Amino acid sequence: MSDRDNSYVSAASREAELLAIIAEDEGYESIDQLVEDQALRSVQYGVCASCEATSSRMEPDQDAGWCHACEARKVKSIGILSGLC
Image (tube, rainbow, N blue to C red; front, top):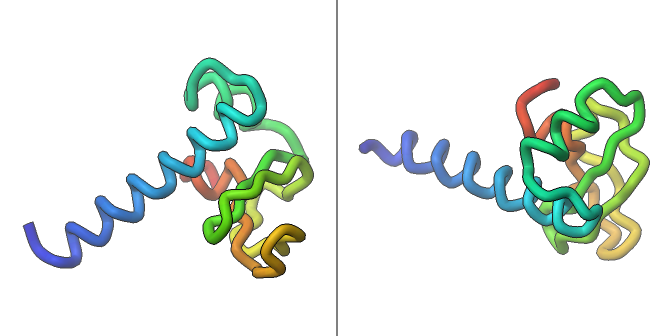
């Protein structure tokens, strides 16, 4: 596997990890249940890729939202993390 392939696997693993954080924090039994419930909503949950704080009001295509916890533009929505947007 090339370095490029390893980096893709690492990114996909991190996105799954962030989705799992949201699912746990919001009381979902699985990532699939979370994504199914949130997929068509105009406002979705998000999570900071830096400090892992969750947010409940992100646009589905948000990939650089403001994190109030660590003050960084690292919040990604479920739509971005799951590949729906």
